[in-house]
Image (cartoon, rainbow, N blue to C red):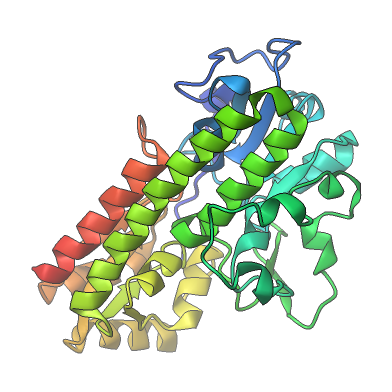
Length: 354
């Protein structure tokens, strides 16, 4: 398969470090305000989440700010390196998704704390299930654990901790490591993002004690909205549990699972599409048969990538009158995290009800 690449366009490369819309600073100058507390996130998704929690207490900058930039294969610039070096707090997805951040952190020798979102996923290899066993998101459980203090500043970083475990590691066409069987697109799981929000708030409260009350209030307001997303997913589950969907790439997998739906996509198909590889003819045939079987209620495609096999699947769905939704990996222009996820959930509910 020929994957339509999400490459950094020449005009965008020079502006790869842009402050998010609505942040306290709108400058592209990596130096920024020397006196400001600075959060640097790998993508605008995590940048916007951090912005919602930090409020006016910090300036937030994201490295990836455009749908034309692919976190999987992004090549960081010298400006990116300077931005990371000057950060007071770093936020990444982890799990091999935004490996450029690990490269920047290692090359720059920064001692800023690092929050890796994948560590808060319930299925992260080696995760302590007890840490996420209850739903008491409003308490201070994360404030006292290894994610709430400066432990990340001194450890070997989350991805390295699991580099030699029992899970197989594969490299994609960009040479980035992915853990077999683990879906790293954890921002599509509101429950995981609740834990990430708690971790961001706890870390900021340590570094910005004078702003701790406002930060905690912001975090609780954000978590309340996340709980609204979870309630909407529970409504889908109540009405459609067990219904089948086809997902061309793994990105929205957590959202599908939280809605109680069954993903019938052959693993080899979604993995090949995500990694930019050709889909084997037998795998493509199995995927087409799944869509044409009449059992699939919705097809979900990644709007930021495409290829011949994905087009065939979408055409097959259209011929069978199956709704096709397009989700993205980064924030649509002008969107923030909560309305974006709410829109995705509403579109999913609407398609299932049609």
